[in-house]
Length: 147
Image (cartoon, rainbow, N blue to C red; front, side):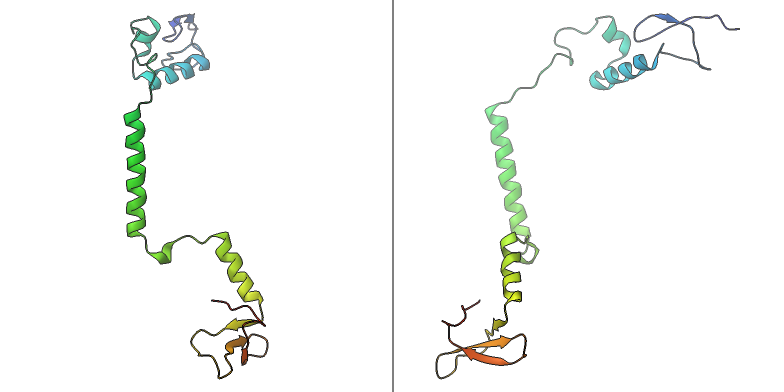
């Protein structure tokens, strides 16, 4: 029976190991807290717990905002947007809800304006009838002109 005691490297309490091999911490909470402290400060746990870190240590350091930092972020954002718009073709632009609703409105109507045909002698515009499949000529007042 092993009656040997170990000292926790986080809280410095003596404990009896419950696992095989070298156990460094007395509990899971000490192990997790030690990991958090190590990753936050990149310093050994022993130095942090013994108070070797001063007031200007990474623990107490706070970041402040400055006007130059805000200006740099704004200029970087504008530059990135400009480059994105310069290298993005019009075919790759996003579609808005208004574009979709206009398209659905055109598709749900019976008559579609034919843009590659001229008006007839009476000034009527050619429309394609989706139901009959014929080209018919209508006045602008009867159906709103679609583009």
